[in-house]
Each structure stands twice: as C-alpha cells, then as structure tokens.
Length: 195
Ligand code: CUA
Image (tube, rainbow, N blue to C red; front, top):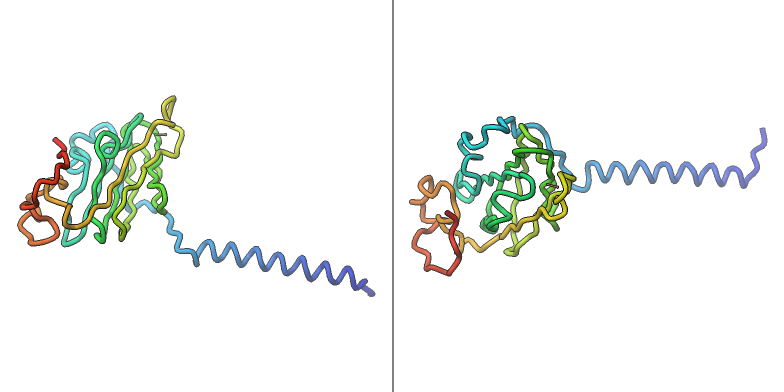
C-alpha cells in the first residue's frame, strides 16, 4: 500500500504530539513535586469541635523542636484563627496544618504557596510545609460556601524565630522551657496577644 508522503508526515507529527502530551502529563503528576492530600488527617465530630483537644483551642501548637501543628477551623465566613487575628508561625520550622470545617465545605488556600486544601465538616485535611521566607500571606476560601464567600479571608504571618514567642502558642507550657525557638523573655514588641 502506498502512503502519500504528506500523509506520513502528518501521522508522524500526530504521534509526536501524543508523546509530548503524555510527557507533560507525566511531568505534572510526578516531576513537579505536586502532592495529593490524603485521608491521614482523620475525622472529627464537626458538632463538637469545642470538645476537641486541639480544635477546641485552635491555633499553633509546638510539637517538637522546630515543629509545629497549626489547627484552623473554617466557618461561614472566617478562618479561626486567621481572620480576626493573624495566624503566626516561625520561619524555617516544619509546620503541619490541620484544617476542618464547622459548617459547610470551605477551602483553605495560602496564596502564593502550594497549600491548597478542602475544609470538609467531619474530616481533617493536613499538609506539612516549611516557610523559609519571613513574610505574610493571604489566606482565602476557594470553595463557594455561601453569600459572603468572597469575603472569607485571613492572614498568615511567617515571622523570624526571634519574634516567635510562647504567647504565639496554644501550648506554651509544652516546650516553653526549651532554649529555642520559643523564648518567653522576648522584649515586648507591641504585638497584641490573643486572648
Ligand atoms: Cu468559605 Cu467560601
């Protein structure tokens, strides 16, 4: 069978395109460092978050030297903490976010990072990150959650280790005696404290 050379050319180009598509999809899946959120965060009673040992007092908990767990509740239409007061974490630390919702499905996105979780009532979504830069990030809800969805935002401040004090922790007693990074003797820098 004779195939016209133009036809051969187009067949070859089509195959090349398909190989290219497979290549880019494969790179996006395994080469770009994209991680899927799994269900290791576990479950929680969305109607009894007040009784939960951590979600009852959401915020930043120190769990080890330079390791922190951050608990955030999403609700119509705020992040708690994050909206009424900024969430604070120290730069260079390993931070695991635990996100859940007290009412409907919300989103938890830290703009400019790859932190992007769904906040589902009864489920806890987790992601572990390190912030090297000291700067502040906007937090936004990216799942439509009601009439004021577009107003649901908050702030995450990544502060130098020296400015992160035990007053930023929900469990200051746990590691408050360690020499670093939490230091109760920091001079008062005018940051207002929660509570
Ligand atoms: Cu919460 Cu949209």
